[in-house]
Every structure is written in structure tokens, then in C-alpha cells.
Length: 293
Image (tube, rainbow, N blue to C red; front, side, top):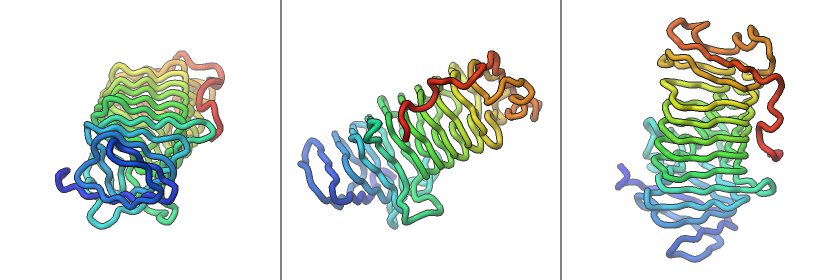
């Protein structure tokens, strides 16, 4: 499939792209063959239509202030649609990626406003990447905004807003700290892997944390779970072991009230128990982003 890959990347006026073999340009319509290799730098306003793949030998540096908008896939360019991919345009990273914005110049991953429903983009798909780093980023309007498989990833100081799933991963080494997950259908969804998820705010989502199967060696602590409308935590049908979630704030210290927000053995006897003691006595003051997206 990859050898037949054909994608369009449409870059608006003001974009700067540099690689080992090209010089800066002000306006580009680029047609890429099977995969992109080598070193790349993105800056400015970038529009992606279709599936864009960065190969294992590639590196991508995204500069502060860059806006990456995903348009409806051009005919013949949405070649990867089956799981673990999605229908719609995707940025697929198999090499390394560094997307580090600043509070004054965050990096934004968003949909093209001309296409409202369904969303024109599936997500940023990180696949077997040895190094992926995101900070001061905004992800909005995706199927699964940041989808990670068998990779090493750090996500800090970022906002996930109005996605079907904000952060989704399996079998990966993940650190997710000081992020805001707001008004997604599901804020965080994972199975397997060894994630460290702490100092985040999960607020006004349909589901806060969804653990789908066999969690191992994870730490989920010092987070604020606030008003997640269906459930704060959901255990999937393959999670028959107890899940330890100590030191989080649940919007209350009342045990019965917290239990009513959990989908675990209390609602399905085949599931494990969410063990949430000790309970944080008040909201974690250092949770969430230190900036105002």
C-alpha cells in the first residue's frame, strides 16, 4: 500500500519548508510520492489534504505559531482508512517529531472550517516513533487527535478540545502532564503501555478516562476530573482487574458521589474495581496548562 501512496499537501502563502535538499519558498503546492524522508521543518499556515506519511528515517520539526489545518481528502489520497487509521486526512509519523510551541505562539492542529461535518481529519497518527514531543499545542476537531502506537511520546502543556477522542494510545511509553482535555467525547483512551498521566484537567467531556483492556504499569494521579458527563472513568469489557487511581480530584470527596461517576464492577460484575483512595481533598492547583489557550 505504501509504495502506491500518493498525497497532496497544499501550503498557503507564508509557509516556510526546509529539508536537507531544498531552500525556503513562499508558496508551494507539493505532490509527495510514497513517503517523505529526511529532515523537514514546517512553519506558518499548512493545509493538508489526504494522508501524509513521514517514514522511519524522517524527522519533522514544527515551529511555534504553526497552524496545520486538515482539509477533506482529495480523491485517491485517503489511502489508509482501516484501524489503526481513520477516514479523512491524517498526518502519519513513523520517524521523530518535535512540535514545541510557546504560550504566545502555540502550534495548532485543526480542521478546515469549510468542512464542518464529518470532520475532515482523522488525527496525528504516531506509529513506532522513537521520539515524539508535543508542548504548547492545540488539537481540535479530530476523530482521534493524537493516536499513538508502540511509540515513545511526551505531551505537555497542550489543549485537546472538541475531538471524538483527545489522546488515544496503546503499547506505548507515554508521559502526559499539565494538559487540558475539554469537551471531547472521550478525553483519554488507552490499553496496555506504561503511561504516566498526571497534573491534567479532564473537564466537560462525555467520558474522562476510558481504559479498554489490561492496563499495566501505569500511573494516573494528581489529575482533576471535573463534570465529565457520562462517566469520569470507564473500564472496558476486558478489564477484570482492579485499577488504582490514587490522589486525583473528583469534584467531591463524597465516596458515594464518586462511585456514581464510575463504570466498573458496580455496574458490571465482570469488571474490576476503580480504587480511588486516597482522594485529593481539593482541586489540584498545579493541574492543567500553565497558560491560557
